[in-house]
Amino acid sequence: GAGVSQTPSNKVTEKGKYVELRCDPISGHTALYWYRQSLGQGPEFLIYFQGTGAADDSGLPNDRFFAVRPEGSVSTLKIQRTERGDSAVYLCASSLMASFNEQFFGPGTRLTVL
Amino acid sequence: DAKTTQPPSMDCAEGRAANLPCNHSTISGNEYVYWYRQIHSQGPQYIIHGLKNNETNEMASLIITEDRKSSTLILPHATLRDTAVYYCIVRTNTDKLIFGTGTRLQVFP
Image 1: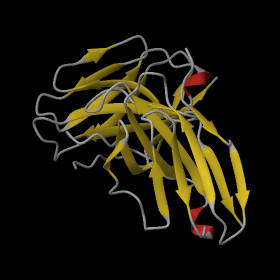
Image 2: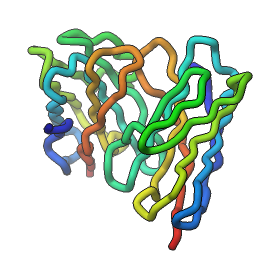
Image 3: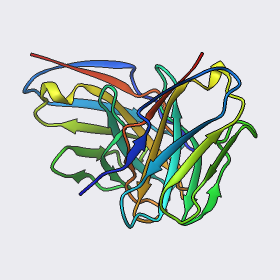
């Protein structure tokens, strides 16, 4: 079956612009996670949804970052007033349910802020 | 969350067993050990997990010491396609995965 998909695969933007990154989880997966990965580092947790609600947003670095999952399926990560330091690969993962279930990752969106 | 320590890199000859160590000396009794790997330009891929017993699946084996302070991931017959960064993660009852910098495994012909 289809895995986790993320669009776009690459996004180049200018400093100060607004961007949206989309994640389509595996059908039927109730838990959805966003991570960010900088060059040479492991992925860093940002936020996790159980259904429509954000169960843990402790990894969001500041209030320029926001994520939604209005219908409990597709999620959008929104970044306002982008900065060069936001450049990274943004990874999305989903799992059947939360708590110790395997997380399936998408291929990521590479964001470059010029 | 418990932290893990892994060597930054390892080499392995194709066809040989790759043994990747991980130290997690501060692990708690209800925390699981998970292994993921990340092939270049792809998202991480789940490999295996365990609590205290050794585990085996079609990809790998996981050996956890009796005191649970360390573990070893074993790829029994490494292939070139196993070249990747391997992450050892101790997972709490929260749901997020906390990745370190992992071990870069290079399998050579």
